[in-house]
Image (cartoon, rainbow, N blue to C red; front, side, top):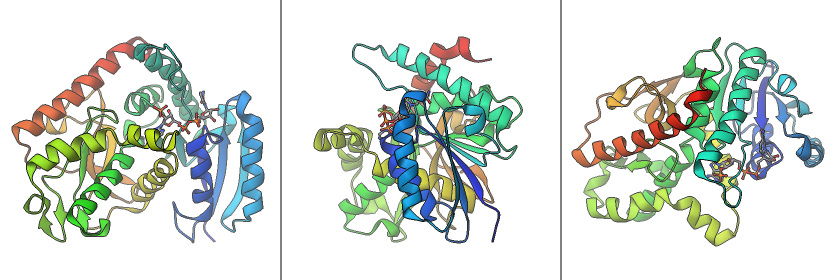
Length: 326
Ligand code: NDP
C-alpha cells in the first residue's frame, strides 16, 4: 500500500470541518488506493468538540484512515503536512467592521503561514477556505518565505460548482455535460461567474441562454448563493463547501480532465492584466500537482470591468493588511 498522505485541517470541529473530515477519511479526496492521516487543529476552546469528532472518525472504522492527530498546537498540527486545509477563521461578530475582520484574520493566517513554513512538508499544498479567503491565502504565503507562493491557493470551487449547477438547471442538461466554467476574482460579492467560454454538450452555452439571463439572473444568483442558503436553512452552507474542498484538492493533486478547467484562486502572475500582488480566481488546468492559468481567453469590455472591480476589492483588502505583510 502507498504511504499515507498527511492532511491538516484547521477549524476541524466547525461546521465545514465536520462535513469534510469524514469524506477525506472515506477516500473521496485522493481515491480508494490512498491511505490518509488526519491532523486536526483547533483552538483550545473547541478541543472538547474535536475529541467528539475524533471518536466518530474512529467509530466509522475507515480502512484508509491510518491515524488521527488532534491538537491545538500549530507546530504539531502542521508537522510534515502534505496538504493543509485552512478552514478555521474568526467569524464576523455583531458590530464588527469589515476592516477589523480582515485584520483579525490576517493575524491568524500570518501565524499559520509561519507554522506551515517551519513544520510542513516542503511540497505542502495549502488551500484557504476561511474568509476573507483570498487575502488570507496571500498573507499565509507571505509568511512562508521558504515555500513557493504557488503552493498557496484559496477556494473558489464552491462558486464554480454552484455555477455549473445553475447552468445545468437552466439548460436542462447534466452538470457532467458542461465544461469550461470560470469564476474570476475574489471569493466575495465582486466575483465574476462567466459563461462566455462554457460548452454545454460541446455547444457554446451562449447558444442556449441569453446574455441578459447571464447578467441579470445567473451572475447575481451565484454571487449571493451563500446568503440564499443561510436564509433557507438558517445556517451557512457547510456540506457543499466541504464538497468543494474535496474537489479542489482532488483536481490539484490528480489533475483536471482533458479539454476542461476548474476555478482556483492563485497568486496572480499578471495574467489578464491583474496585479501580481493579489490572490485571484482564474481558470486553471492541473497536472501532477501543479496548476497553470488558462491563457488567451477573449474578454469583452463588460468582463474586463468585472475583473477590474474584483481586483480593486482585493487591492483594498491588501491595503488593510499591508503592515502585516513581511
Ligand atoms: P464554518 O466551518 O461554517 O466556516 C469556517 C470558515 O469558512 C468561515 O471563515 C467561513 O466564512 C468560511 N467559508 C468559506 N466559504 C464558505 C461557504 N461557502 N459557506 C460557509 N462558510 C464558508 O465555521 P464554524 O464557526 O462552524 O467553525 C469554525 C471553526 O474554526 C471552529 O471550530 C473554531 O473553533 C475554529 N476557529 C479557529 C480559529 C483559529 O484557527 N485561530 C479562529 C476562530 C475559529 P464566513 O464566516 O464568511 O461564512
